[in-house]
Picture 1 (cartoon, rainbow, N blue to C red):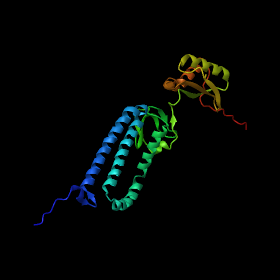
Picture 2 (picture 1 turned 180 degrees about the vertical axis):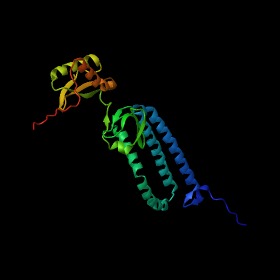
Picture 3 (picture 1 turned 45 degrees about the horizontal axis):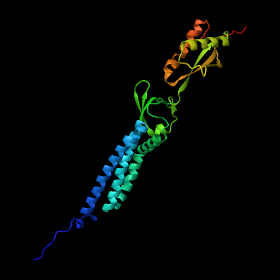
Picture 4 (picture 1 turned 60 degrees about the horizontal axis):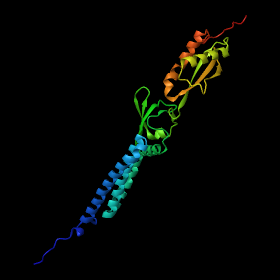
Length: 274
């Protein structure tokens, strides 16, 4: 009678040279990798994330976690001896098709990484992209897009690629800002007298305007119906709503009170003698 003995687990081949022991060893590697990924993400969130902007910390945490998982998977495949050559050939053709379809996704991902590294603006900044309707408060920079809360209260989502390649104007990066306005006076009025009236009105009615740098007044244009005076004032960054929208109102009221004419568009027509 012939007795057949059971093979050791290490010699049992499942498929393609993959044994139970190698599969078990690979599973241990994946388990350890997940544990290490969670631990490092936890340490990063506790010690380093508070030093970064909230959106950058969140995205870097994701990159660290999934990067370790992918690395663990690569170690798993190398130790188990799984042959992916057949899959790579088929996947290469399929990858080309997917690559064209996901080109914008990859561009947004890469742009998001560069935005988090370069940090041209940070969460909470008031920004504007000239030539577009993108203006408001930056809420966050995520993996594929940027969210901006516009000044009218609506939320605007901007793809990272468009945001990264645009000219971004930061309205919060400096402690002071300049507001300007243009007001016209009649040609017969005294320019220096009008400027003196405007200076006094701004000094008395607009306490948020800085004295240094002091307000500046320039002759912007000799227009068809008026001499246009440009008013330039500096103020703290956060007091724009106390200065910018009210500047022309204060200027007009001051000129009206001083009896200085602000002309409306008019034309003088000369009739030729026949």
